[in-house]
Image 1: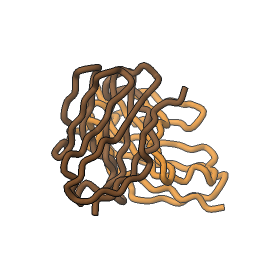
Image 2: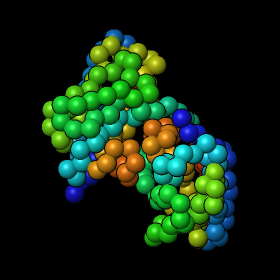
Image 3: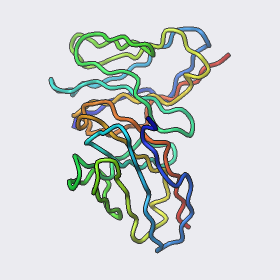
Image 4: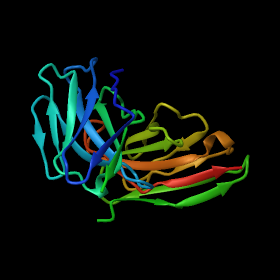
Length: 108
Length: 113
């Protein structure tokens, strides 16, 4: 199964950009890169996903390396409400196996 | 739309008791999933269903049973509760299996003593 590697934790200041990295060196050609986040005491929520090209939506941007072995979730201006655990997963490669993710702390 | 709803929110069970965790979605999704999340860990897939009458095992199915009699409902049954099943349980649904966005419920926090 394809696996992903993320830092355990990251910190950011409020209103500054945040770049959350994810390594997935064993990604297959049919795997989509998905990002979810989990706010405290809530279920995960979808953030963004992509296959090869960079993607933007109202929540974030996803930058995918040319060889697809890594990706970066970009929050353009972090707010206190963005403090959460962020999960990078490959579908269908990961079979929805969430790792521990990256715990993002946002400082005022 | 209410999305994915789960009941109960909290439950304490004694060892050996049984219970059913309820999950309902109103998005007409064919695919539904049950996950568990242990403290400080990611989610693990217990069972999933691709439609009414069809279910399959995920990564950690032992100790659990599911059924899918309607598109909307996907209950998870614990027959003989054990302390190792203390966890937070999340139900989710999607339009397409695995590769599509999954919508999660708020979770059920279960403690087995």
